[in-house]
Amino acid sequence: MIPFEYRRAQDTETAVATVTGNGRAAYLAGGTNLVDHMKLGLTAPEVLVDITGLALDGIEELPGGGIRLGAGARNSDVAAHPLVRARYPVLARALLSGASGQLRNLATVGGNLLQRTRCVYFQDVTTPCNKRSPRAGCSALDGYTRYHAVLGASSHCVAVHPSDMAVALAALDAVVRVRTAAGERTVPAAELHRLPGEHPERDTVLDHGELITAVDLPPMRFAAHSRYRKARDRAAFAFALVSVAVALDVADGRVRQVRIAFGGLAHKPWRARVAEQALSGAPAETAEFRAAAEAELADAVPLRDNGFKIPVARAMLVSVLRELAGEGVA
Image (cartoon, rainbow, N blue to C red):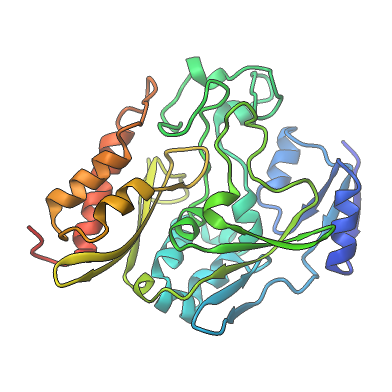
């Protein structure tokens, strides 16, 4: 038994001050990731600050048509919310594609964003892992790599980020609201997570003690015309081998606006800006969709067991774009 102190936060300011002032303190919300890691021996916080009583679970409409998701909102509540389903179906579908119903009933928006990789070597404390123990080495480089990265990896880490929700938020230009010891700041969802570089132990750009309080979805009319698709090893309760979130606006046969993000390919949700730029103003045709997908994936580097991810990602993006553009696309 590894002892720890449990505190129930009374207000956000005190919670942030407590965790910021103690390098071994952590926030506790749904606990679906943190508690697993404590059981596995991946982390051993000496203080847990329970933030479930801070009234961060609201889902509200913003002026102009956006939506604010409280960081404590449960994944199942967000997925079922009428405004989310009507205006951002890609987000609802991404959430319903993740985990099980029981876990979605506990998991929170903030916790979903901050969950750590499911790389088998990260979760096995008997193997070297730079993400778990910096400069220890990366066991995955010469190991089993079916689930690992083909974009943005480094010689220090080839793990992928596991969240489905974060992929949709990256595509939707969502903004993450963060409470710090000095006040508040915002971070674009697409920039919240990091590529591994030389410091894979840092998953996000947040400093220790910074607390996600909400996620803002901006007004985006064409987001109502969006899809999330996920390839996985079984039909439920499995992490993505490849996933894609797409919102598309076509007028007079041409792409007027498009947002694309991939999951399962990198250490972070991968915003496909190369493909978006290639498609902007282009004819909404299969050849253009395929060329954009190929351009986005041109720098992908497969490992021994995951070369299939590249053609799957390409085909999946083309298929979703065709579906959104409508039947009969050339």
